[in-house]
Length: 205
Ligand SMILES: [Zn+2]
Image 1 (cartoon, rainbow, N blue to C red):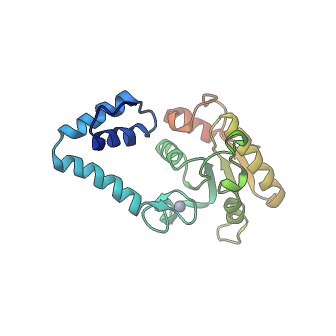
Image 2: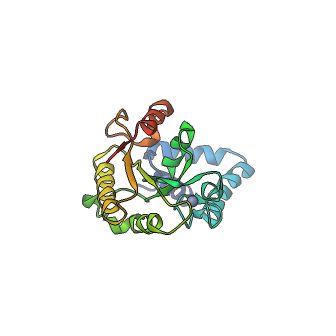
Image 3: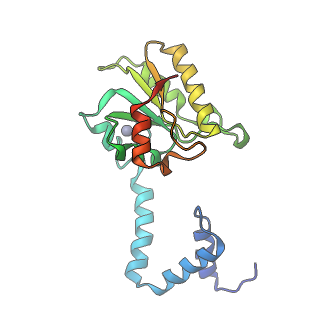
């Protein structure tokens, strides 16, 4: 690309263009917007990005986002520790929470198995899940709900985990969200009524 803009402007456009869903034109528009706003507003944006990267890590128990060693849900004694909902990404916890149908805890895998992209079971928090449900804790884990996305990779991941759980901890029920979710879509985009029904109607796998 020809160097139309001064290097700092070009750098900002390049960085913004790396964000998902932001093409070059949108990146340019955002960059010019940032150039127009006050120093305070631009500084607040930069500081918010810096702070989230410094303060937010992964929960040591469930790998959800946390601003300390444990996330809010794992710290909440009222949440049923005997019921674990397995999701792909931290962003999937929010739509499930919005349904108000789930009072258990979570386990965030950090993605889904995808041989094409080189994502193997070892790249996800599957071993950690198997260890967690196998631990001698009170109350013991009695059900694992597999809420990976209804996509090819999400289904493959759910099947893999279901097999592993059946083999290692056959006493624990393994369930999958009921059908009704749009096939191929991400949980993130499911409306809460559909997702709530899928949770209530979950079936054994
Ligand atoms: Zn947690």
